[in-house]
Length: 169
Image (cartoon, rainbow, N blue to C red; front, side, top):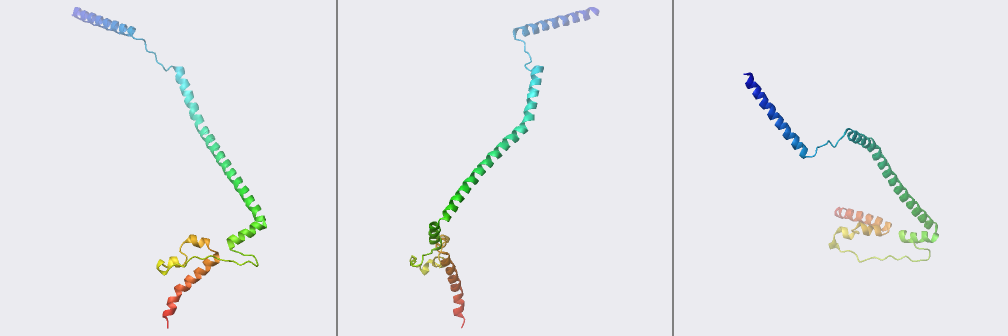
C-alpha cells in the first residue's frame, strides 16, 4: 500500500513538474506583461481628477460672469447710441423750421394767408359694405388727420341711431 501511494505521489509530482515546465516555456516565448498603471500613475491620475473637480465650478462661474459683462457692455453701447439719437432729435426740435414743417405734416396746419387743400378720393359705394363706407382700414385711418377720424366716429354713431328715430312716429 505504501508503494502504491508513493508511486501515485511520484506520478503526480512528475505531472506537476511537466506542467510547470510548459508554463515557464510559454511564459518565456511571450513578453512578460507589466501592469501599465503603477502606484505613482494612479496617484497622479487621482490628483488630476481632484483638480478638475475643484476647478470646474469656479471656471463655470468665471465664464458666466464674463458673458454677463459682455452683455452689459452691449446694452451700454445700445443705450449710448439711443442717447445720441435722442440728442440729435432734440437738436432738430430746437430748429423753428423743423417744428413748423412737423406741424404742417402731422397736424395739417397752414400759415396765416395760405389756403389749405385736402385731396379726397372717390366715395365708396354702398355695395362695398359699412366698413368701406366708413374708412375701412386702420391704416387709412392712421394716415388721415385726427379730427377726420373723430367726425367719422360721430357720423357712424349718428347713422346707427338714425334708423331707430325714423321708425318712431
